[in-house]
Length: 114
Image (cartoon, rainbow, N blue to C red):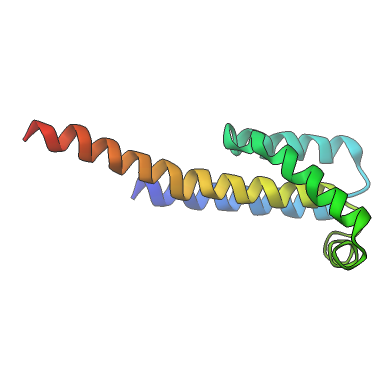
């Protein structure tokens, strides 16, 4: 039950940050604060976001088809691309890796005690 509450809280926080990015797009201080908040709740796997963000922004600028799609979805707000990758890596971390590692540890250590 606690895991479900924590996962729901993480998802709500992520989408609240997304709304903040959308509503406060012109405010540099607010978007920077939201970026760092998202970075903290996706730490440590969120550090892998930077190469993916750079690759996405490179493709946006170099490949016309990709650029128009991202431009349509994100507008001029590059923070939305960063938010997307932080969300993906945070989701993988908190919803797939951590529960998998937790199950593995329980299986290895608790299973041996019986």
